[in-house]
Length: 167
Image 1 (cartoon, rainbow, N blue to C red):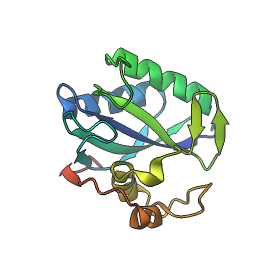
Image 2: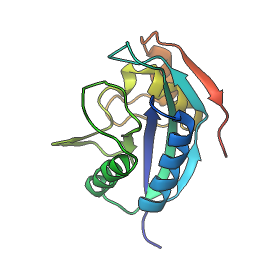
Image 3: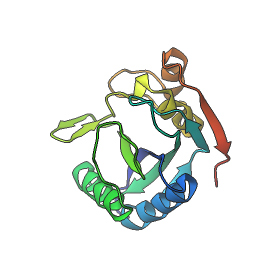
Image 4: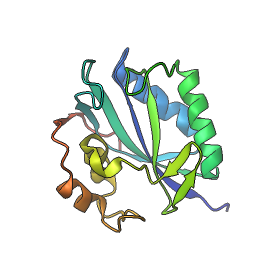
């Protein structure tokens, strides 16, 4: 059997039918990248960075893939595009946003690809759903578990569970 990379993603969006968009993203990611083997509940959060917009729905995913990190980010960008994502303004509203949070426990710093996600420890909307599916995963740079990062997170934005996970 081919070695499978374990990848944690955060998907989210605040335009259109947010829940339907998350479901579509899971389906497209499974088909294009590899099976989603775990998913958190869906969480709703006020917009971060640019606050004068609709609330986001977010979900953490664990998938396995034979794609390299570079192939994965390229595939993710094409899934976003297929779903209608247009990058018009930084932190602006979006139909779908898919971020690589962790790729195995690799540390990657390349143009347009930084893993682990450089801001994850500062964002409750990432840590809450991630903590649900991977509380003991150790951040390869900060050497703390996701649960520890969540406890230390200074982000005050409310993150509330709106739908249970499918698994």
